[in-house]
Length: 208
Image (spheres, helix red, strand yellow):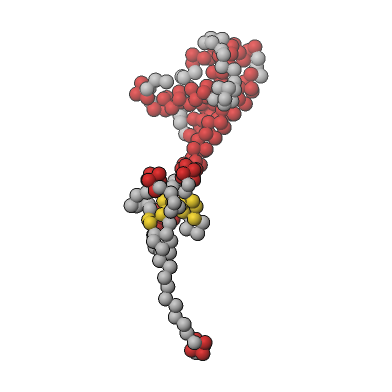
């Protein structure tokens, strides 16, 4: 793929990138199309037709102008294929639709995962702030463990406090092993302070 600076216009670069992305989906681990064709051959022309149609669909989807000159070098091979098999345009369009959907699904998955990570980070930060004044009666060392690292912390022996919605280090474990999740901003060692003063009020006075 040439550098973006080598294209006359930005849309030419993105259009070519989408075309190449169409070919990328043909791998056996993705949409599994026949990519064995060589330049000028029938298989090559069929694959180019699919990549070009899918890139046009994706350009329309994201609002990129289509460069009609880009496929000029493929026209003759396309004409030959379509003359011998007119129904190929239908199959190519169907495959192009699958390519478009596959590419867009990748974008959507990344967006969902990013939003999920952001939500988890936000929830974690809010949880930490909310706990600052609520851990008065605990002798546990609480640590801030990102969601994606919870299994690692769990394997080291960290425990989950449901009441506080936080991971903590049991007293019998070496805190050094959890140092990556311990810092002044996200950890607080709370000392047990269960002493309370009870006021005994006679029943008669309590009712009055």
